[in-house]
Picture 1: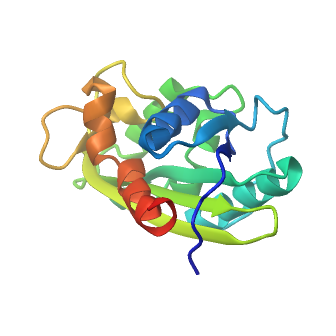
Picture 2: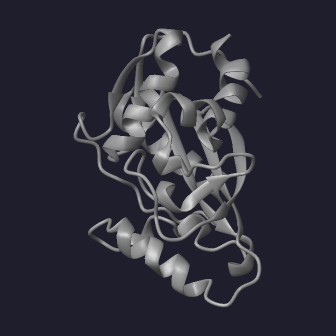
Length: 198
C-alpha cells in the first residue's frame, strides 16, 4: 500500500558515498532534505534477505526506527545471465571487506571465461520506510552486457564493465546526468516518485 512522503528530512540508509550522492541528485527536484545514515552515525544492519527487495526493506526499516525519520534504502546489484544471476545480492560482497571493485570486476570476468553469453542487468530495489513500520518498495532494471577491459572512471561499483543495451559506452564512461536518465536506479526512482512523491 502506498503512502506519500510529506516531511522534509529523509535518511538515506547507506554508507556508500557514491550511492548517497546519486540518490540525493535524483531526489533533488522533490524537496527532500537528505541526510545519510553514515552522517547520523547509524549502524549497517546485516543483509540477511534473499532478494534485493528484502534487503532494501530491512535497511530502510532499521534506519527509520533508529533515526525516528523516514528512510530510503537501496539494494542493488549486477545479475549476469551466464552466472545464474550472480553476483546478484552479493554484488558488494564480491568486492571484499575493502570494497575493492577492481577485484570484483575481475572476479566477474574470470567467472565468465569461455561463456558465450555476456548478457547482464543491473537491478535496484528501493524501500521507503517510516518509523511506524510502514514500507513501500519498488524495483527497477536496466539490461545490458558485460565488457572487458573496464572502461571509464565515472560512477562506482561495476559501472566500468556494464554497457547498457542500445549504447556504445559503459556506465563508467557516461556523465552522471546521462546514466541517471537510463539506470536501474532511475527506473526504480520513477516508480517510487509516482507512488510516494507526487
